[in-house]
Image (tube, rainbow, N blue to C red; front, side, top):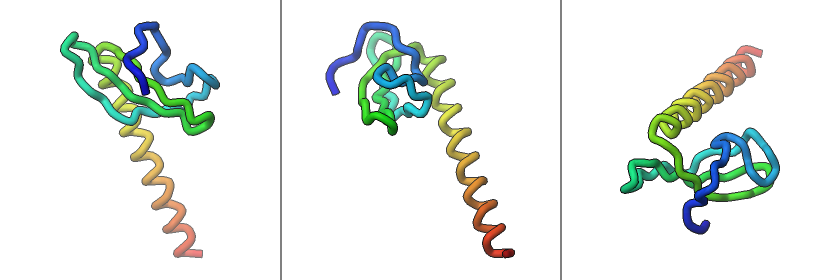
Length: 85
């Protein structure tokens, strides 16, 4: 991973393959007031670093948290269904 890319990039879309599965690896506050996000695409293995305003970073972090919770609930539902079968 190099430095922060100054070009504007959609946060939740991989610039290499356009996958919507790209996810944040870390959120780091920057002295400029922006947030630096290291992110990775599981489809093409692209890894990069972007900077955004704190509100966008917070929105993405909440989205990721919601998606993780939905996955946990789905796994629990499958485990319960398998145990009852």
